[in-house]
Every structure is written in C-alpha cells, then in structure tokens.
Length: 431
Image (cartoon, rainbow, N blue to C red):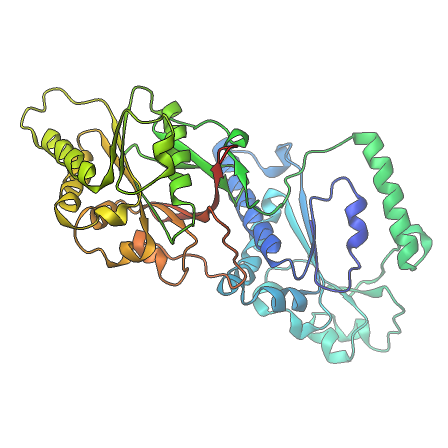
C-alpha cells in the first residue's frame, strides 16, 4: 500500500500486482480507511497467533508493506481528519506491526518533520544528504561518519554510521526509465503468479443493493447494508433488545426498516411481524407484515392490544417472537399511544417482543418520556445523516468528527453497545 504525499513519485508501484492501493495525500477518506484496515489486520493477526501459540514466521500469512512518502505532507493532510485520530494511531501501528508482518517505510525531508512518537518506534534509519551537520547528529549518525563526507544523490548512512548507496531500477536515476522497469516487472509477475486477491480500499458506495449482501450470520440478526470498515455486511441484532432508527427527513429511515424486516424474515423464522404506520409509508406497500395498523387511531388501538397482552398475569406460555415496527414514530411519541409503546418496549425485553422504531432526529432529542427514551436505553440502533457533534448522545456514543464526511441518503452510523460502524443502508432493486 503506497501513500504518496509528495510529488507522485510512487505512482509507478500501481503496475505491480501485489500493490493493494496507491493513495494520494488529498484522498483523506481512503487514507483513513487504510489506517483502520491496518489496525484491524494487526489486531486480528495478534489474536490468531496468541490462540495458536505460534510466531508470525510460522504462519503462511503474507507480509504487508506500507510506503508513506513525505511524512509532513501526511501530517498536513490528516491532522484535522477525525480530530487527528489517524495521525495519533500511526506510531502505534508502526510499533505493533512488525511482529505480525506489517511493515512501514516512511520518508521525511528534514529531521523536525518527524515527531518523537514516530522516531521512537522506527527501528532502522537511512539518512541521505542533509542540509547541515546537526541534522545528521540528531538523526543518530556519529560525527566520525558524516564529517567531511561528500554525498551524491542516493548516498547516505544507516543509523550505525555505515555508508550506503541506494540502488536504482534499470541502472538509471531517470524517473521515466524506472517507471518502465516497474511496469515490465509487474507484467512478468502477473504472468508468473496470476491475479492475487488483495484487500482493496474502495470507498463506500452511495447505493447498495440488497441482492449484493450476504445472508444474516445468526438468528435474530438483520443485514441492513454494507459496513465501511471491511466492506462486509452490517447487521442489527434484536436478540436482546429493539432498535432505534434516527434521521432527518428523507434520510432513508423507511428504507432501513424495510431492509431490516426483509432480512429478519430469513433469520427469525416463525416470528410475527406487526407494523404501526401513523402516516403514509412505503412499508404499507409490501407483504411482509402479519398485522398492520394504518393511521394514528388504529396505531393507538393496536398498541393498547399489545400492552394488554404483555401485562396479562398468565405467563406460563411464552409467545412467539413478535417484531413491532414503527415508522414515522414522531407521530406516536406523545399521549396514550406513546405510554403504551413504552410499556411494550419495557416488558417486551422479557416477553419475546422487540420494537424497531424510526423517528425524526429532532423528536428523538426532545423526547424525555414515552417509548423513545425507553428504547434509547438499549444503546443500539442506526443514526442516519447524523450531526457528529450531538447525535451520538442519543445512543450513548461519540461519533467520529470528520470535516469531509459526506452522508448520502441511507448513510449513517450503526451502533451496538458502544461500537460505532459507518454503514450504507441497502435498498431493494425496485426501490
């Protein structure tokens, strides 16, 4: 993986079949994706080695090399992204990576461009021609080594003072000539090894089809879309509690409900599905529900029926799983219906009833009584097109604060017990 924050000199590595991605310094979202991918890879490999009791050298996992050209350019590009989260994470990645086969090669144009947190974990340095003698000394090269040295391009010192001459491809320092050699090498490698599957760093698409997702991984889970971190399926879990879907108007709340219910039909075999739709909803046009209440009056009657059932003293026979879906929940947030639904949420945790409710963001923030604050206690749900500064409070989490974040319809953060994942909600092909 190559991160080019300089003048594009690393571009030729794209011709190599084992190059996972070539990133420019202004592609901050993809660079952030690379940092997240590397963290997850390192943690996964460490856990696997720990369980197996073997060292990395005894495994068959491929080594991963990350090239980062011009550290100061990386710092300028990423220090304001996610409040500098990725800049802070880099020293830890450099330190943790080698033991599990993840290695970094970084360049900088001066000693002061590299912070001490990075310098402290870099094991090997190649110090090329510097502006003055102090630069060599602070880079760890002994005075005896650099005193009076005349260094042509590519000549320098290892940290222990050994003088070295860096090699060039094709016997020439000409950039075009080296690019041609790399391209020829890439063609030979492709012929020799064929196509090699390498994890890509593609951006999260603005539209995901339900047909492209994998089935639910476990009972009572709903696949709702694509997760940003690993491009895998993102799942809601209703095994212990319900889910809250929050978003501004036209953010994709109804689509998220429709996708979730469609998936639960696969993973919650035998469950009963009930829809409360106080307003016109696309969920009324599908044949996914066993019972439907249209309009606020019918919703009130059906919620009273549910409360009465859950409050019955005879609990000797537990009911089948019942999934109650509420669209446009802001219309049912107050009054008697809101109180009945609060009872449904509270008692349903112990009586195999799960409520999945969609509500407008402003209402979610202003609701202090009724079913909305009761459902928020579960600290799980979907925050569509959120305001990262305040909307995380709805589910007790801190959302990533990214200045360049774009939220198309259906994009938001899936939250479960404090874990936050950026997702794109899937839609049916005809939607």
